Image (cartoon, rainbow, N blue to C red; front, side, top):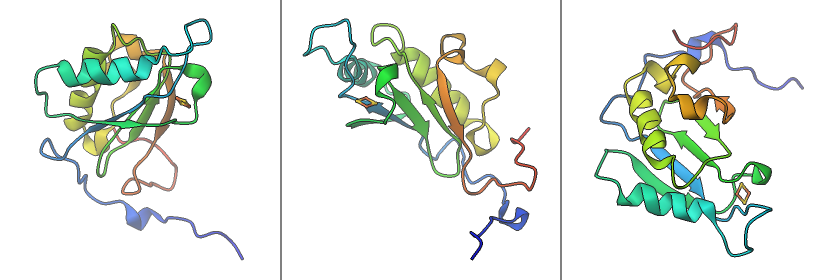
Length: 144
Ligand code: FES
């Protein structure tokens, strides 16, 4: 039996809006090979995000995003939005950068932020971009 394929009819209008939350999910269990065993850069990044002024972005902590060799790691996602996964983040630098990316996602159809519109510090740290189920054109193209 063939696997079901999501047809173009699934495409809908973007459901994301500035009111829908963008969630930053941070792995708090990553380690750096060259660092002390109890150094957890993701936990520090989560603390740095929580200490920022309220940006409308939701922050949640998780244990492992399965990209352990790219510590520290974070995923940005939300209802009807693309999911972007980043690695090699710096807890002392990247909290405001992740918020900037989340705010860009909040204002784009399906949360899709083109590479050139992403914060420069994140461009080379992308690991994955995963479309939402609501966006599935037959040719697999991204929203424009
Ligand atoms: S422990 Fe952080 S991605 Fe696996």
